[in-house]
Length: 341
View 1 (tube, helix red, strand yellow):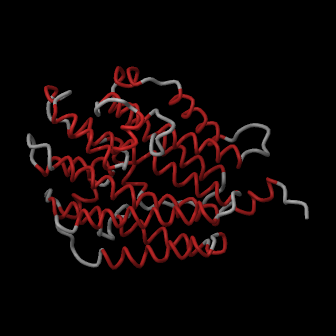
View 2: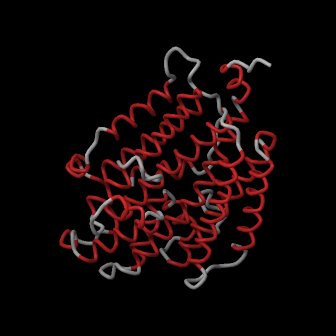
View 3: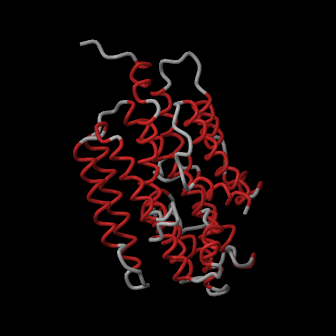
């Protein structure tokens, strides 16, 4: 039987199905990323003794893009309330609980596009996380719960890679996951360099290097960093690793390389790249030609802030080019507000 033409296959996925696939995987990635962001804040708060704990947790709210919604609900900054807001609060559409719920909802909507193994992994994760987050967390149970979230999301990813056909369904899922992952890596870096670095005198100190090592651990990259760089963790090398090293699976460059590949498959029947594909290619080429020195010279925080804005624009262009339904991301408004923070 002759395969359907590329344009026909993509057209069959446009609208509700493509939207559901894209956002299902964005929210799965978002749940894991929120766990990693909270983990980064927790690790750094245990080592940074020069500022109040509440300042550090406020930085997590800012980087997650949910500072305003938190303050509207709770007002004062309280570590316990912040952690609960980021992990369990269903009024926060970017919380781990809300993200898992929304991912499952999107998965049900596109159930026939998923393999049985992938759907079961998603549904089991939903049930497991719902049980784990049924009650408030404390410092004793928090690390174990964050690890559980990361493990369950990894199981979904394993089912995805192990059972899904490499077709347009796969590519829309890929785009959602890696776009969200790039956003998270930029935010985790911004937590450390812009908000949590207490004084310029700390740069290069043992405290500073320990905090950078904590960032590596929060993205499960401590050992892989040691394989790639024959030196102790330093800010310059870690920035290079998490931003520009294509072999690091959570780096900005790797994420955009994978997005570029998926866009090329989706766009392979077109004479010219659509606007979203062109923007992805542009960002990937820019990352490929950058050096750490250039990033630091222009300002790391400024670079990351611009990257997060560009990343959000890519999401909007994908929705427009592939005819997604409007208002597909209830967390988008709060995320956008963080760009002016």
